[in-house]
Length: 194
Image (tube, rainbow, N blue to C red; front, side, top):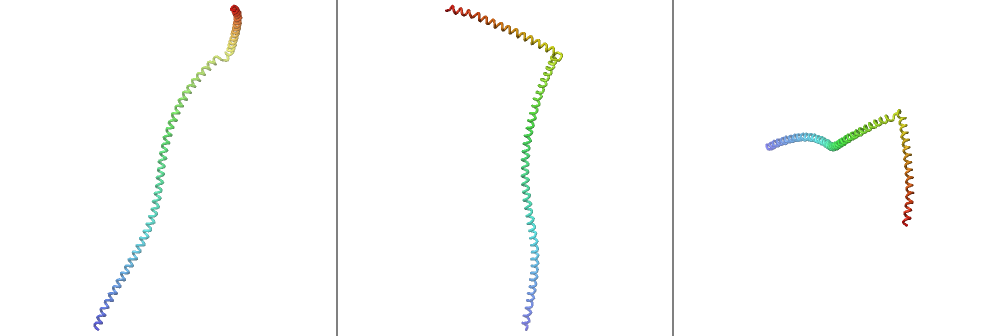
């Protein structure tokens, strides 16, 4: 009976040990489950944060592309502005050269016009002097005298013309007489030769 009693005593500690071990395992399981739950919570948080960061990265990538596009446009506009500025400078230089050329032409024209004006003024002055002289000669007071003088001159010229015509007529008659006198002499000479 003592052996049976001793065997029963030996089995009881084993059960208690197993129960204790089981309790420790269950506690460990619960602790692991808590840790797993905690890890899962942390993992979910990290996943959400990762998704947020990915969304933010996607937005930033879009903004970056927009900025790059804007930068390209601004660079293109800047190059165009530089080209326009260069063209404008060339145009301005050409305009200044043309303006200087026009200034020279205007100066030459003014000088030429001044010379022509001086020449015209001299001619006008001469005409005025001539007109003064003519006016002094052909005044209304002297007009009857000038008409009489012109009439006398005309009469004298007509008389002189009549005299010259009479002299010419006399010369024609003398010439005819000389021709007639010369002709019989020539006839007589021809008769002697025969």
